[in-house]
Length: 435
Image (cartoon, rainbow, N blue to C red; front, side):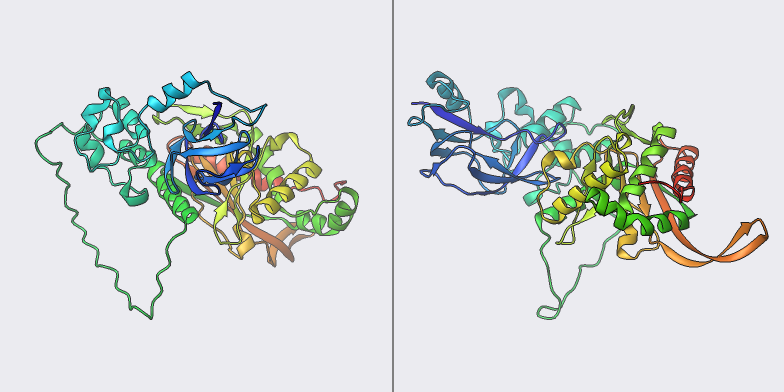
């Protein structure tokens, strides 16, 4: 009987696991090839997983809210009545597969291999195979691993929790198998949060908000943030855009917003200062210089959450190409139609906080990047400018730029020079530019 395994798909080179949101089919249900069988989520995007063949679901191995590594078998499909199935496995292969102990992302410790037994002393602790692998690599004891506060569901220890701990790890804790690990008492005892039932409202964070919170805390714990500011005069750019936006749309069929102009200026400045287009290795000892210039643009969703779609190879696109890509990504984000590959691979991120009326911002770095640029609101006001006649007061369009950078690898000179260069490109915009 041909049995086809449904595996957790790979949704990006940096993604090693995903969470099951819900199954759309049950055991015993029939399914058509390419029909959506379940929905999964990573820390970046929700995705639908299609069936690799037509047939009947005979087994479902993981349930909603469980975290599953990429490549793990999620379900088995009986495709015996289908002539041309995809990814068939032989009976021998199926026997080998079914003879393995079923592993879950949050596993019972009895399922961990014998060589990992030193990490399985507490049957009440939840350690995924990924956490076990990291712990072994870092020579961590079971007490040390279990001392890490978990931020996952039901206190599960996540990969980011371990990496946060290792960043500040002074020395490995000694193994004391006969005694429970002692947790140092904090000198700060926060007062419990009081609320009036029926008067105050408690709102449970949704899954995406929890992931955003986790990512932001991880970033602040990982990178020492420094923020630099400049104020720039964008009168020429604003005037040109206002004059050309109708003609631009008529010629290219694309809206001309300020965002592609910002992306263009940032891409040029990165070419001038490539050190800002980088990441820090996981061990914190090497700088990875990125060749591609992929600009992430923080975008608000209708739910109020943020997502960061990516303009790939922004330096290779002209203004028409940038406008087309920016419009597509923004619309797809608002309609929740972004593809996994459209939110992966960013090397530098911009956040247009001026969209919300903010004068300026102190953005949090989008890990594993080393800098992020915030663009404030464009406001008209009286400014003193120098002309051929001397100093004069004129109405100008002004805005603030703020750059947060990782001070481990970006010093004040690089951060300040890059920020100034972005400002120069925007201030020196050619008012006679052709579309």
